[in-house]
Amino acid sequence: MARITAGIASSHVPLLGVAADTGKDRDAYFGPIFAGYDWTREWIAKPENKPDVVILVYNDHASAFDMKIIPTFAIGCGERYKPADEGWGPRKVPDVEGHPDLAWHIAQSLILDEFDMTIINEMDVDHGLTVPLTMMYGAPENWPAKVIPLAVNVVTYPPPSGNRCWALGEAIARAVQSFEGEDLNVQIWGTGGMSHQLQGPRAGLINAEWDNMFLDGMVGSTQKLRTIPHIEYLRETGSEGIEMVMWLIMRGALGRETRALHRHYHVPCSNTAIGHLVLEPVDGTVPPSPTLEGNNAAAQSAI
Amino acid sequence: MTEKAVIGPRDIHEYLSEFDDIPGTRVYTAARARQGYHLNQFAMSLMKAENRTRWLADERAYLNEWPMTDDQKEAVLARDYNRLLDLGGNIYFLSKVFSTDGLSFLQAVSTMTGMSVDEYKAMMDAGGRSPEGVRSIKGNC
Image (tube, rainbow over all chains, first blue to last red; front, side):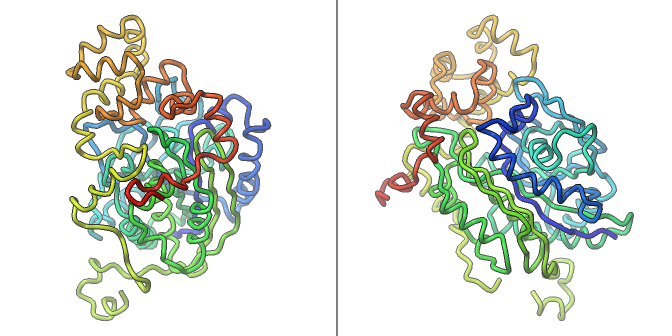
């Protein structure tokens, strides 16, 4: 069996990868950002917390996917993934090892649950995926966990709604629970954000008040974040703040109620507000699937 | 759900109609994605080291291999990123162009704001641009 034991949220600014790769991560500029991850690095190294597999929700930034194909939700079912060359050569970090058994199980389960996933067997992974690994693990010879990449379109409008992302998280939790292979400690990470705008005369927008409202909303039993419309992210958090819908996939997968183990917020990193949370489920139950339980009256009444 | 759902418009016309109300922002809609398709695919091609070498050797010749409009080609040559956004460019694709130039996101992004790199960096270090007054054109808030 497999179980989701924790959720992590983190920004994935590419400059953080550059800072780590060039030894600047403890300088005056980056030090306060990386210091906010020290707690997590210590926590995740403890045997009882160490995940076997991380479902890593991120977005590709014109690296593996160009404009030819725009999958809304894509799940990596491959054996391994190489760091992408994003225009300045690939990051010199380890290859990312997948977990095809669990990934295919999740992919099949999600499709039966009416989430029509795109399945990826081969791709390179960019800073959206490798920077969170760096933030949580530093620079090990090999990444200590296997990774199932889950890529979300948050570039071409419309991205999926926050509500749909949350519901996908709930479906992922159902899928993980029904895995019959190894006994696996699974974490789910939601990455990207927080407020930032990388384009146009309004570039540089940061909204610490809104970001902290969002951090608050990830904790406890409230579901208020799932109904925030896209236009609110655009107005309040900048054109690239929409990445935060990916955090809601993680939040949905943690079930009814969460507790915050760690929280970190810092402005700025380059153009972006850094946010980071470590959450654990207090009540990890998720609603039964309206699809899989469609003929079961008792399950339907619980939805 | 126990709380009232206000997810936003489900009608695509209503959904899109609000996007032009945000000051200084070009939302990357399907219309822009169609307009900028070849521009963005050109930029994407710079992810390959051998293409970057050819591009740097003769930018105009390289651009002429792509079915882009003259406006798009001129804006690329001028590194006019606001103009490129208007012509359907997306910042993540355009980042391949400025990365090849050796510019960071902060340096490239600052060129769209009418500020110098130093002024822009100082604004970011002081907490970034406030959302006050730049949320909505018609709402003036």
